[in-house]
Image 1 (cartoon, rainbow, N blue to C red):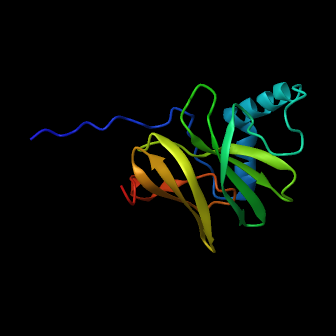
Image 2: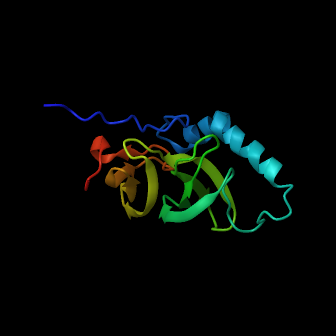
Image 3: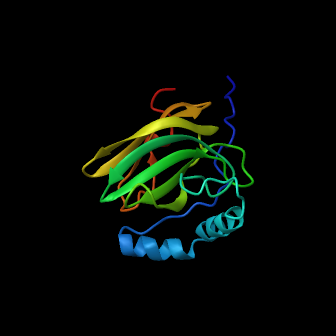
Length: 164
C-alpha cells in the first residue's frame, strides 16, 4: 500500500506569536517588521490619486471579499481576503477600528496550511473566544479560534478541515 504525499502548503508569510495582554500586544506590533512594511506601503500608496481615501483598502496588493466583521472586546475587527506581497495565495487580512471609520492594519490573521488558500467565511463571537469558519481551498471547511485581546493568535481546530 502506498501513502499519498501531502504537499506542504504552509504560508511563507512571517509568523508571529503575541502576548496575552493588550498593552504587550501593542508594544510588539510597534516593532513587528510586517507592520513596518504595511506602514511603508500605505505611505507609498497614499500618493495614488485613484486609491480610495475613505473606504478601507488593503495595505498591499488587492483586497478580495470581506469576511467576519465582528465586535470583540470593545473594538471592531475586519477580516478580508488578501494576497500578501510576494505570495499569490489568499490569506485573511485583518484590521481593527474603534469607530468603523478609522482602521488600523494588523498582521495577517489566518494563513494557508494545510489548505492551499483561505477563502470566504465568517466569524462567530462568543464571550471567551472568536471562531472563524471558512473554506480552505483543497482541504475543506476550516475552523480557527482566537481569544487574545486583538485576535492576533489564531489556532486551527485540529490543524485540519472539520469537513473535508
